[in-house]
Image (cartoon, rainbow, N blue to C red; front, side):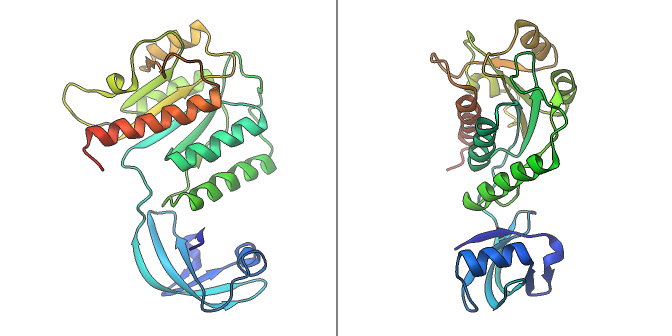
Amino acid sequence: MNRFFVSKDSFHGDKVLLGKDHAHQIRSVLRMSAGDCIVILDNQGSEYDVVLTSVRSNEVVGEVTQKRQAAGEPGVQITLFQSILTRDKFEFVLQKCTEVGVTSFVPIITERSLVRETAIKPEKLDRWQRIITEAAEQSHRGRIPDLSPPVSFEKAMQELSSFEKCLIACEKQDKSIRVALQTSDKNIPGTVAILVGPEGGWTLQEVVAAKESGAIPITLGPRILRTETAAIVASALILYELARINNEP
């Protein structure tokens, strides 16, 4: 069934009211009508089976028939600090890492970033948010990942202290993600930051600064990956390894 994130204001008891944008997609694009079923997500981790009762050009009304916990949210919260990229590559990272399970995105301006804008135009932020939302709907997420405005590398380093584990993907490292995530007390980290650099890689000074801020340099294997590939691989491996440690299926 088609899935749609809505605000809490859309719920009125057992009724759900969807506005003009959703109405256009449901009525004009998907060609749905009264009696059809959709899934509504409240962005708080719950999903609802909904039967459409009224489908009009500017409004859709549905009735909730069942509520349950969304199954697509990972147990660990991953924040991807991604060096900002050119438009297509950065949007690809947002889309695919949302599908993988990243919880939040922080674009960072690094020494070798090709794009150095810290003030992103509202329409671009809106486009990024739409990409994330649509990817979250498609991949059966229960929450829409957060998207922060771009920050400097120095500002990003200041934020690392709030995470239980911090990793930075680098060349010429020998520590794997599995080893880096291990803890002596066997406690599984609930929050993980992963830093992925620009197309030209991190500078030595940035790697040193990240280590001083608590980040562990890790390898993603013997091959050199494009930065957008590295972001997806690193995020997926973190979730896989933590699920393995936690004996999840």
